[in-house]
Image 1: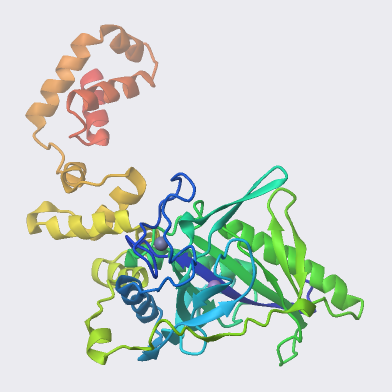
Image 2 (image 1 turned 120 degrees about the horizontal axis):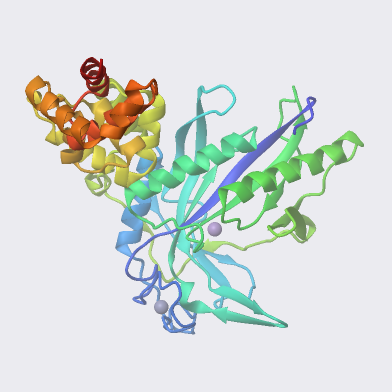
Length: 434
Ligand code: ZN
Ligand code: MN
């Protein structure tokens, strides 16, 4: 709950592992989640002296595609830089990342704001490409390192601090997750850590124009719900400080999903000087305009929502649900192509069948919508058959048990494999019985 007087200011950093075959700068097989530790490594991703990195073309192409899908400007001049810091999961002592010439800048992604249902534009500050680090595994007193993950192409997406609520953050992350799935460039599996999120949070008094003079980053969260909880926890914590006339300390925190709280990791007094400089082993990259133009962005979920509404008359809620999952929107697209004029099936029927009945084949929808048997001869034959097979129920009805007729309706419907109108069956039955 946010105190009336204050409003949160939230920005996001999102890391997404690309599902390329090989590493960002080496030929190791990547995305080997669950493989025995340190079995997919080489001198390049282990950072051994003298090893030379060679950028992965596919990773660059997919990062451009993400940039385009997020309405960014693609920097035709782009380069890699070394970002220095010391940590056991980073054997080189620096990460190859991008500093002042990222692949994509200045984009946006629209979401439907939770409180107002109005389109809200979230600005994308930048999209850059880097390499993932190894993974630390804590076993009792020991910390082990698995370098299989190191060198996996990693895209970092940075938003502007455009959020004022944790609900909107969650909506944005879900939208982004769906978009990435449509682009088919990452498995974006949160549980495996292929999509990791870092909200940065501060709070200001409502009406204040300038951004707060501090911010708190919560590192490496891998669930949308945890991101929301971490933000809510931080906002309340900051309001405590502010309402006592204090500024919350600028720091980096972690999320404890057991205790449902954040905890301090490091304060920004030891703020990192990453000493960025251009990666000397990789020449700057010039992306030709013709190359950028050749990268095709597939139809995105938001465009599909619009088409489904305008062209096929779906309600927003249904169009939204259908497009959340690429498999169901693919099913819809396929089935809508199979519609023939005389089938009596509409886009709305198909949407209902997929959403409510989990039907995924056009044949089934067609059967569902098949015209009911109106031939009264067939209906009456079925009724006769059921009546003579259920003498006791008939007697019950005649002695005043009105409900007995419903049993008979059910039996007739079953006899006719559902291809009859239940009301007509009931009327005809009552006629016969009286
Ligand atoms: Zn390698
Ligand atoms: Mn990063």
